[in-house]
Amino acid sequence: MAADTLFDKILRKEVPAEVVHEDEEIMAFRDINPQAPTHVLVIPKTKFESFADLAEADPEEVGRYIRGVARVARELGLDESGYRVVFNTGPQAQQTVHYIHAHIIGGRQFTWPPG
Ligand code: 5GP
Image (cartoon, rainbow, N blue to C red; front, side):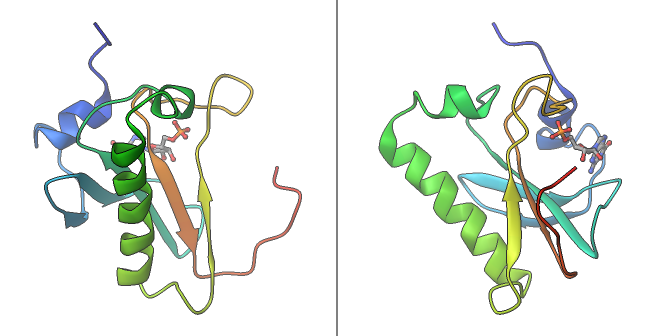
């Protein structure tokens, strides 16, 4: 069984977070250490440890999650300016919480390549 993570605790409301969206499928909350004026993390209520694990799931479930991420970005007012969606996966990408989360970051000009 997957280890309990910080985001399991946030989902169970055992750890406080600034929630910006919650429905039956997803929860979205502000990152505690924002890398841009808007930095929100979106988790599915069904837990996957990583992006690779999500990719093995029922395509409908994957689709509902991705649609949820886009909905939150729209609700944050980022559609017109644009935004970045990041799934850090594994050690070299510096994934620190092993509960899948999409970073939605926006509100400033980004550069490429990322650091
Ligand atoms: P990762 O590095 O795994 O892709 O992203 C984990 C994210 O969780 C980081 O951006 C980090 O700032 C954020 N984070 C760590 N602890 C907390 C916390 O207690 N509350 C919230 N809201 N975000 C956190």
